[in-house]
Amino acid sequence: MSDLKLVSRQHSNHNTVIRLGDELIGAKELCLIAGPCAVESETQLNEIAKGLSELGVKFMRGGAYKPRTSPYAFQGLKKEGLKMLKNASDTYGLKIVTEVLDTTLIEEVYPYADILQVGSRNAKNYQFLKELGKVDKPILLKRGMSSTINEWLLAAEYILLGGNENVILCERGIRTFDTSVRNTMDIASIPLVKELSHLPVIADPSQGTGKRSLVTPLSLAAIAAGADGLMIEVHNEPEEALSDGFQSMYLNTMGDMVKALRAQAEHSGRTLNLKKEPQIV
Ligand code: PEP
Ligand code: MN
Image (cartoon, rainbow, N blue to C red; front, side, top):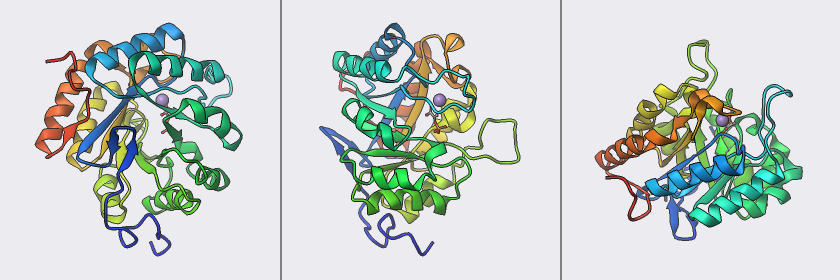
């Protein structure tokens, strides 16, 4: 682990706290990023944004550019999707997390994103990571699906070395011999990365398990393990979703999940960062 420099606790023993307006990521409050895997339409996105906003959620995810295994699968609405994200964010007061697929798209995605997501498939795209080091917005860096913890932290090192210190690490499951789940959620990586690095770490149990029924239990486990936040896929009509419907929470049951997360956060000596008066009990 000797090449870990800027990301390491030896370099800075203070937890990095990322500021986005009034919101802090990496401090006592846990950030909850929720939303569809992909932006599919104005109607879909607005319904989800409205529902999330009513639950007090402050950060919405949604892919406009989607990295799909098959070239025949839905690739995202691209620029149109970015505009829909912006409209929903203006209407419902949500901060936007969206994926940037490669270097040529940084400039296009930048104005629409509060946080730029770098996907698992790009966690070893070193030239891209170098370019992200020049960006003055936070980067949410997914763990590569076959990256060791050292490789994941070195990917973050590339971004910090370029000058961007605002990196949020995201555990999203890894490939193992077990095919009964889409990915194996590596819960141990969360406290281990917190030991090794000062950067905030969040968990994505949606990609991490690929199974809706496992998302709440793994979210609770991630908070218990010390995660600084969660990224959760949610859809108004998961059966109709153009990507990842099988792992997306139903919007109309998100309230129960948020309640459970809030209780677990408090149990772990944290709080869940929600709008002051969410319309749930
Ligand atoms: C996603 O968040 O929808 C996604 C594609 O994630 P990952 O890069 O972790 O597979
Ligand atoms: Mn997805």
